[in-house]
Length: 522
Image (cartoon, rainbow, N blue to C red; front, side, top):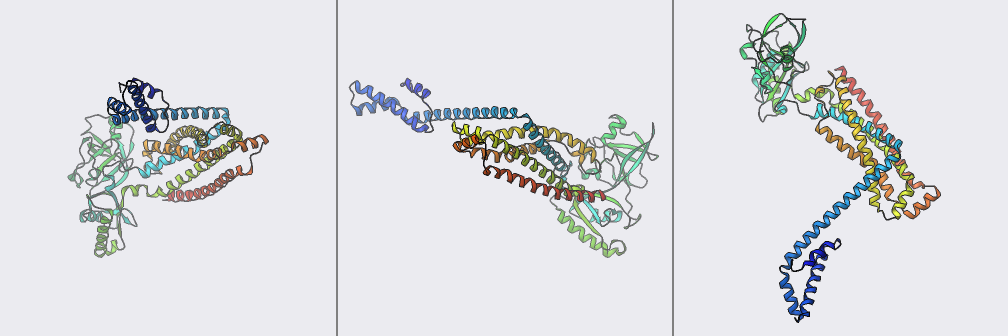
């Protein structure tokens, strides 16, 4: 390469076409021919001069590959810079167009923001309540055991299900009640759970201080003890490390604190203190249903296997205790399905409804953009006549739509954050797991995907319509002030789409009201 100092200069100055290999071959052939001519002037024959030129040139194929690679990198860099330049130009053009019509931009952005905000807020609820796993280790193995039709279990049935099955490796029962805390200051109420042995271990929870309730503490003559929640520890004892061994007066009974549950552990919901409950199978009998249960499947076991075992046990108990267990069936369901079962259908209906609202908003904004595209027919015709390709015109319209969608998405995300907070306050105690609802990473990705989809829905038809311009005909039509009936087709289609979506929305609203009415009556 250094024997031909002009080669680098020629390559640096040569324009880059699409056929890089051909250009490189031409350049190298030129330099070989120049060297051959120089040698022939010195008296070499043509054959000898060509052979000597190739020898002096060196590894021709290696140099060819190297130069082709350099030229290819340069071409790709130039093309990348050209694309970035076009994108910057399209962005500036779109911003200028939006800035020239602030009223139109405000209406479009607000319309999209309401649709995107409502959709994102409801998706946050769906994600937090239905899609996100329960905040427990191996949550997919947690199950409920109900008794049809009375739901809760009797102590004898609980003991039989706990001891007889192999698919359920651990089963605990509990009941909840409000208890009165007395002592220093005014009496207050605490939400308590009276639990059987092993409730915390089912959730694989280890107290941050102290220990779990022991088996002997569930006996009839055991001293009263309790495990308190992390929040109760902070509220009543300011997080004091010497809380173990202190006492609380619960319903007039002095109760020793033996453990503090980890932060964030809540089961059942809102429980502040767990106390042992004595199991007495000979108490009020199999007709006394006072236990709510939660269990953990054995490793590798399925709900179907646990249900088969429960069905066999129910049949045996019905034969042994016909007075209390005839027609009694044990139902095994996943804990997550049990917790959200009453609101699952309603939330999906609400999400479908707000998506319909978003589609209507997109149709409205697309219609507005079509009107603007029709008004800008002359402008597009001039740009086409000056050499702008159809793809470039369509891209500019899509960029403008993308700017509107991005602004609507940003405002919609702010509305969604406020809406999620309002939903948490209004739905507390009505929708399970509502405390888990938040605008997190998956919700932000959903909002970003919504913005991309909205950009296409809003801008695709106007962009295609603008790119179909015939410059000469459009200039003539623009000069006569008419646009032609063919231009009304997409607008009529969008209006029909809006009407259809409105009907779907009305039906969805009716289903939603019926679902929530049934849910509130549960």
